[in-house]
Image 1 (cartoon, protein in one colour):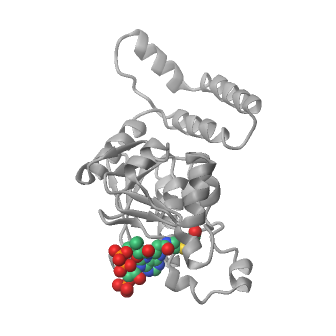
Image 2 (spheres, helix red, strand yellow):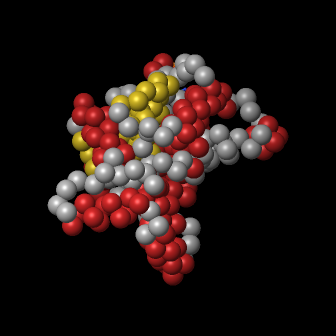
Image 3 (cartoon, helix red, strand yellow):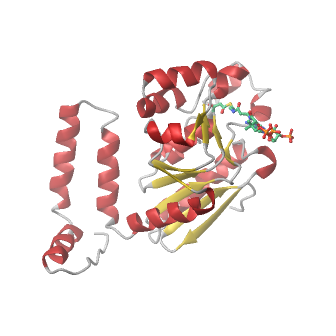
Length: 258
Ligand code: CAA
């Protein structure tokens, strides 16, 4: 598939996807979302890719769903086509780790897309918000749920009810982003982090991701039991043996992803 609104490239074992629709602040039109889904599927299937970085421009990660495209839609259409479901959710459903590197605006669907990723690294100028209420609608790609889990009810409620934008410092303080870095170092910083992950054992990385995500979907007791069983199952892997042997022998491990 040829891409018009994104750039997908490989940096070693890292798949880098750059949203590239500068005239519209990377607004997430259906074509962009289809291209993004295709790129994510391609990197998921590529055994040479161990982790993915999703980024935008220095000005905008993404300013939300494309309002001009949505404007003419009616209830029958969005309900019948189940607008958002399936297409947008590819980022949330990836089994490989996906890091969002966010500079500039991450608003509406842009903030939601970033929150679908496993964690967010923010540039100093990052701005997060769910301004849908100001255009007569509400977040539709998980914003009311993921923002609330990330920053708690008080801030999420205020942001969803008023459309207030959160700066990078507040986002870090509130637990929405893992750290803040200078904008011109953002993408390289995210790639370095992704590369560290990509050099580890892929099945174990996927198990760790699945286990952390379980914390959002179940009780503590069931979550701990899930983790325990997955931990036990790492003992069936050659990479677990190799990792522990390498530690004992004071050398670097040579993981085979099995
Ligand atoms: N959809 C479509 N076009 C958009 C857009 C969007 N979400 N955001 C920006 N654009 C377009 C603008 O219309 C403008 O296009 P033209 O040059 O053709 O007029 C271009 O991008 C540049 O934008 P601005 O001139 O507005 O730039 P600015 O620097 O003055 O402001 C901004 C930047 C604060 C991000 C402002 O563009 C803005 O408020 N955008 C909309 C943000 C928003 O409401 N997002 C939520 C969308 S709804 C949603 O996402 C639903 C969901 O949950 C799935």
